[in-house]
Length: 178
Image (tube, rainbow, N blue to C red; front, top):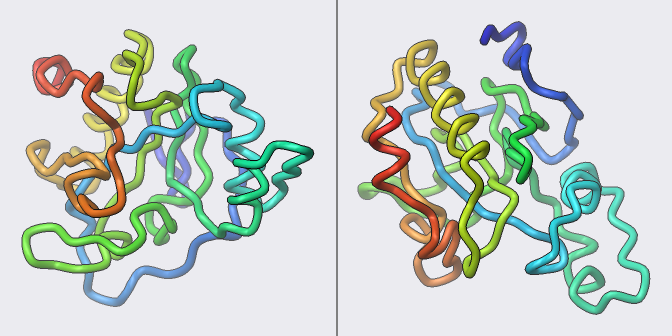
């Protein structure tokens, strides 16, 4: 893996407008793992791309209608088949964590890399997703000097609002791969 202008060469890149500059003098020192499926429980990668690119057409789906105006993104998405998709260059702030706190610091978007896994709270993730996730974390932790212990779920930084990546995410497996 290599990065040029904050974009990983092994990733399929789509430029999300839902990002901005990080604050000055902020070190990126946290990975936040998320899970997403749209609508919940359905694996439609295109709908996730459309959400992050502000192109979501909800059609007649009530859940999609409820989120069609959200302005969110993530640095990366790892699909069920292990494809790596990037939406925001790593040096920019993606809008993935929302109201959040880690070790007394608020607004985790300022200092974190957001990684979405295509999945949900009630289903296991695929071995290909763990392979790509561990490779990505290895690369980013080496290049950005992020401690590999600084990996949290969205539920840990926003416990009142979020449950992902959920109980089926295998933290022990990920740690054994790092």
